[in-house]
Image 1 (tube, rainbow, N blue to C red):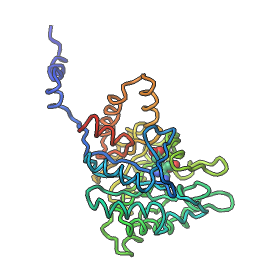
Image 2: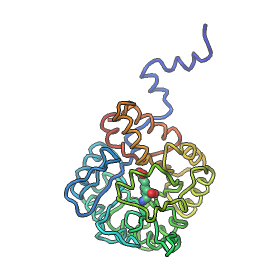
Image 3: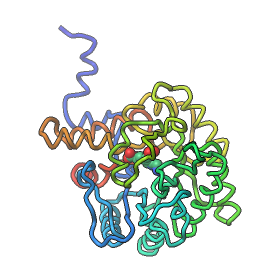
Image 4: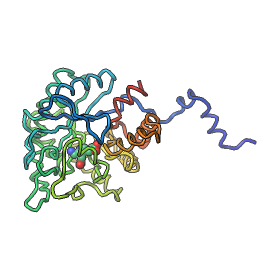
Length: 327
Ligand code: PBG
């Protein structure tokens, strides 16, 4: 008996034929490694809720980046944990701030061997943990925050960033950053906009990683997207492109594969997806319990994000997957 499905099954019979006809392939070239650097520490500090990820000192960061370079990973994205926070988040644009110091050290040592992306937001630097300055009622002041973002972008560019990645979801942030950069002569620095960024429970471990607690039990639902909404992601992406974004991002990844697919169909610019801290932590927790095969699950998850349409993936799995599976 031959069923029509035989045609499909005939193409699944060996690893070689599956590789030949595979529509999607995951490569080391698709990976961006998120890294944390903390001011005023000498030894790296493990992050409990992100097994295998640490808050780096400047020295341990350099060692970690050397490993990424050796693995052939094309990019990293840097987050900073300052020694002191204030209401405005001024360490975000201090030329001697933790990320700026890290950028200049890494750029000096590694040149263009690996792209240095700098996350651009003030939440790691504000005493209240919001992505912008707040009024006396605790409400984020969108327009007043834009000037601070432009300052931070210029500080990152001066320090040696290859790409700035605004993640704060302030309206007008891309154009404010573009004109700030252009005005300071950094016309060639690309902007990767976190365009479709949802107010997600999946950022939990990241907040541990950067020591952020939002004041008064607050949240980001006033400025990040509502998980119920699909169409507004396209609106956010279009507006960011109109403001001058060079690349766009969807975040988180797995719970928003439909959004990745929509954005891919809509735009021609490179599309990133952020497989975020909570997504990584869930996978690691299940693997540590022996409930799933961690490496196999990692490849399946990352492949699904590419299949949905992402060109590259920001993921805490980058180094281990590059080392154990893709190399
Ligand atoms: C904001 C920012 C966040 C993440 C990346 N940039 C947290 C937030 O919006 O609350 C989360 C990344 C992750 O969970 O891995 N600076």
